[in-house]
Image 1 (cartoon, helix red, strand yellow):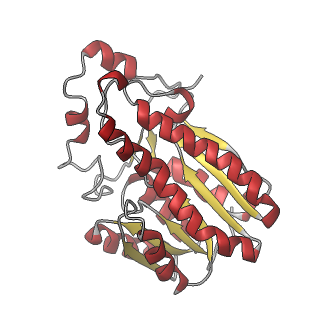
Image 2 (cartoon, one colour):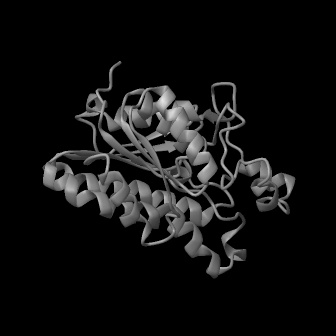
Length: 270
């Protein structure tokens, strides 16, 4: 299916690893002009080369930390060199740690909230005025099944992702009259089949050991409670499976779809 994205400027945050990388390459394969945002400059350079090989004529990497309130202005300035922004993929997210809420340090809550919700709010706020003025645009937020059912031992992360889902719906109501669509993809656990697909900042990078540290003191009983069964014979989604839905929602093929939250969960919510 031709998504008719050739030449349209698309910003993807968290673009250098896993879901963000797959979405970036999916958009590039459809001919979109890619503005890939991340912190790993080496991974960003590789992604630009891969995007051009995939089919786009224009791709650039913007080194930025979305935790910095000044980052959206930097990103928009870089994107403007390619043209008007038609697509925003708010992909930055993840959990800072794990554990029970009663045991949590209140000082840690802001990290999960800003990483998952604050970054999305700031980037969306940056792109909307021009989209509204031009009466067109597509925003795709990456949520999580954690925001639908609540992931055990991830209380603040789950709440932040639920907020992403809620914001998707209310923003769609606000901006639909201006021709701007807003949707959300809510993946279950997702990994890339390419071991080289994880940048240095990724929780899945071999040097990270993020999950080993986050759940180091978790009992086997609690780890069992954390698991959810899929109905498809494997426990995770592949990044490309999440990306294909995001690319579709960003395209005019989904021109009558807005305000929706779509799980990519292998039937785990069943």
